[in-house]
Length: 290
Image: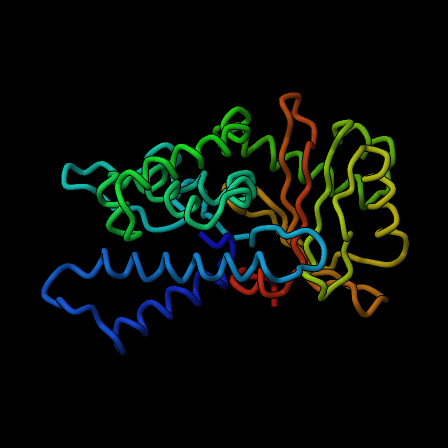
């Protein structure tokens, strides 16, 4: 719902605080529906507040470790043994592409889409969780799916082959940057590659996406021009695909000490998108060297 692990932690804590301080009237009934409703309402409030608050530069979801093939969060099991994964499975639902697509949805649309198409709630269960009519659920889901249609057309399964290809490309790209090999860098990038950096105004970052092979190459060469040194790096599964965690040393006070870089490849295996997160609140759940 939030696209931010730190915000999610806060919401879970607040939901259970409310359960202890102001529990539901019927404590003899299962608590899950009540807890789900509280968490969703808190999430929607947070999303509305986020939209009203100015953000310095582009907003990106927080990187989270997804542990290889394991689901990225709790996936309930039905009595027959199957999971509740619906139209989108849980690993896809924390991918950068999916979370960025969700940003186009209104908070209520986002909640309905996640309940119906990720957690496979029925129309009735969704209506109960959100305290709306079943007709409203159907209408809202139709609009949400229509907004997500562009994502649906471009979605790619996260196969073992894609993960290995992304891991190899990450290593090649970082090696080319370290060597300042312009020709190699350009060969790895698609013509319309898009670089997005999120420093949340805390650290220096591009205030708008950098688009195009030449511009992205020049941007990175500027960063590596005797200014920033990588002191530690590790490739791990981040939001479903391999990403690189880095610790940095710089002569500039507003340069970030840590960053996470994720790639999206195009159909030809070139880098189509680069996402770099430096905002400290979005990195606190990750394990760095220190």
